[in-house]
Amino acid sequence: MAALTALLAGLLFGIGLTVSGMANPAKVLGFLDLAGRWDPSLAFVMLGAIAIGSLAFFIAKRRKHSLLGLPLQLPANAKVTPRLILGSAAFGIGWGLAGFCPGPALVALGAGYPKAWGFVGAMVAGMLVFDVIERVKKSRL
View: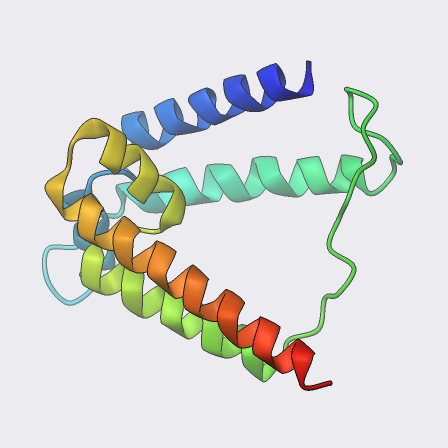
């Protein structure tokens, strides 16, 4: 049941990304072009997502289990660290250069955007490099 729910949630998320234009790099780059022909429409999508996400976290903090009876695993650390800032900067630079962030890139890959192949390849390579670095750091401890 949990796998089916995850599949349906993922499909709904992908449809939402497609309908909102978040999987279209040209739309995203138009939103990020503050000095040129700025397209503010994605700001409304983001504000809606933040509102719904905030409500979900508000409810989740008061629960120990999900609606499916699975344990809730909320982030325990709320500290702003240099590592978080560096990761956020890398995310923003990648988003600005490519017009994709990870979720929409996977949707765009499925929709046949050729540019998504390069982005997803680079994203997976970055994850693998990160994993290797973390393993090396742990082995030195």
